[in-house]
Image 1 (cartoon, rainbow, N blue to C red):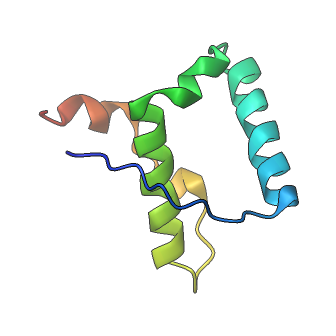
Image 2 (cartoon, rainbow, N blue to C red):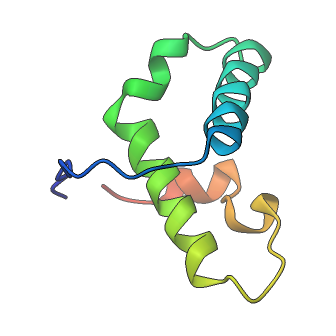
Length: 79
């Protein structure tokens, strides 16, 4: 998989940036993870895939629990 970082800056509303920053801080605290984890390629890939999934299903109300796999399912995936 190839990751391409776009150079174009998108104007994201301040309320959304603050909401994301708060959620990242909560993730870090609740799951005892370093805040630096959000800079990793794996986390950013996961965030992008979830974002894209939500965007493609914009006509329905999807809960994140419906998208995230069960840990036993992840163990079965071959990389």
